[in-house]
Amino acid sequence: MRYVAFEGGGEPVTALMGNHVQVVSGDLSEMVPYLGGDKIRVLAVFSENRLPGQLANIPTAKEQGYDLVWPIIRGFYVGPKVSDADYQWWVDTFKKLQQTGRV
Image (cartoon, rainbow, N blue to C red; front, side, top):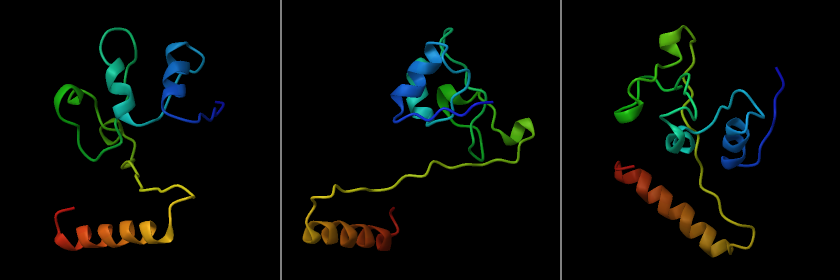
């Protein structure tokens, strides 16, 4: 097996569709537009439970015998030219949101 690194979500999908790679691991939201037909097949989702809607028929990795749950890790990022004051505004805003219990 050879690992191929890609810069963004579009590149691995293009490589998969062009048969340049055989397997892609990525954010399911990037794959949804290609579900159905003969475009791609999702082998497993790494969530604790099956996902709803059109993804409900895709088994979890655990269902297939793999003890694997991998939630999508997200973050918030700002550019290098954001002022210290603006950066601090975002930090404070996220702290306030966390304290509301609604996040």
